Length: 257
Image (cartoon, rainbow, N blue to C red):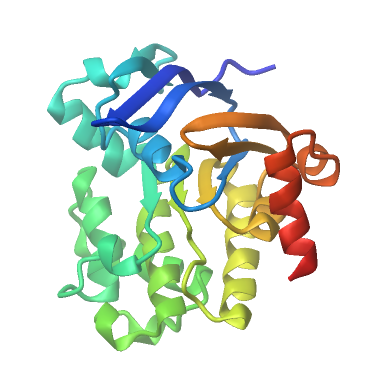
C-alpha cells in the first residue's frame, strides 16, 4: 500500500454554539476518490473547507504528503507555500464555476494563468497547452479567445476543470461539481470527470448530496450528520448495505425518487 497522500486527524470546528464538524479522522491514498455525503447542514462543506485549508480548525490537523515525501501539516506551511500548493499540486472545483474562473479573462487565459503561476512564460507553448485542454474537456478549441460569460453552465464547469488540471495536480477538491446543471449536462460532465480522474490518477475529495454521483465517482464514502461522520466505508458497501438509520433514510429517499 502507498503512503497516504492526506492524513486528517481529529478535525473539529464550531460556530458559536453550532457544531460544524466534530472529531473527523481519515486518510486518503494517492489516486483514491473519497465522497463526503449528507443533507444540507450536515457539515460536509465545512469539512471540505477545513481539509483544503480555507478554514482553520478549532482542533485537529490536516497533513499533506509533499512531492519530496515529507508529510506536512498544512497549517505549518508559510502563506507562500500554501499559495504555491494551491496552484500546482491541488485543484478546487466549485459548484458555481464563476467562483473558480476569472470571468473577465478568455478561456485560454484562464487555463494559461495557472501555467504562468508555475513559471511557464512561452506564449506559444501556453496557448498550445490551452488548446489541447479545451479539446480534452470537450470545448471547441476555436473558442479559446471567448470569455466564460459566453459559455453555457456546463461549458463553464468543464473550463474550470481544465484550469484546475492543467498543472497535473495530485489532489483535487470538488464541491457539488454537477450541482445546478440539467440532468443531461450532469451525465456528460460526470463521464468526463470519471475519465480524467482515472487517466490522471487523481486523488479527489468530493462533496455531494447526490448519492448517484458518489456511487459513480468514489471508492469510499463518509456519511455526515450534524457535523459527525456517522458511517464510513467502501462506497458500494455503504450504499448497498447501510448500517445507520440515517444512511438508510438517505438511500431509501433516492430509491423512492
